[in-house]
Length: 233
Ligand SMILES: [Zn+2]
Image (cartoon, rainbow, N blue to C red; front, side, top):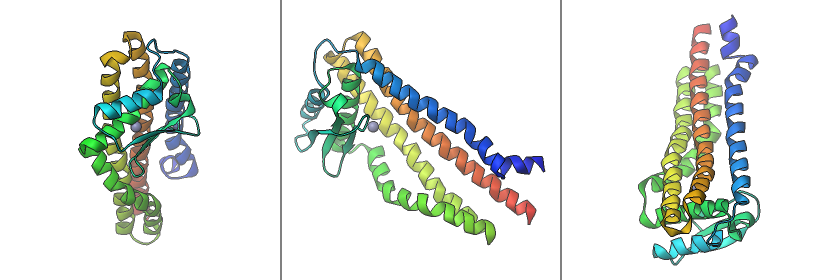
């Protein structure tokens, strides 16, 4: 009785989600605080985020990708379809440790595409399937719980695709950060500045780890709900 309350009821849901909610909050607070802290530390060479991104593109022989300023805060990304590196105002024009770390990371994604880095190709191939899976997996699980366990399990397998997507995201993100740090180490940042950039990028990477953990826990929870449903039948 108590066990079934913990595992399936609303109280159960809260207990499952609490560690994740805390972990997500800690991870995003770490991103914000590191970003803020190292946005105030200006690099001695005085190069801006936009300039470092341009330099990395040129050094890798990439001439069809532009660097542009985009609205928002921490909204920086690489858009492979439209071939641009979008840098927020706090990165594009800034000469801070945060700006250089983030700009070099996004440029790292452009280099990954240029080189045909396998995990990013695989991750992209998964995007449409993942969108489908995240919409339909829970519907299948819901219907399956009412009608048939096979349908529910099919929903769990479909949900597994979203977990796989998040798993493949990890090497892509870690690799982009490693590329960024290697470039920055080669003459753009001194030792102290580099340590700061590493903190900013590590905090950002942790949010992807937390996202994966969240999905894994959700997957596990679905399986427990399905097996609890079996016992009740
Ligand atoms: Zn990234």
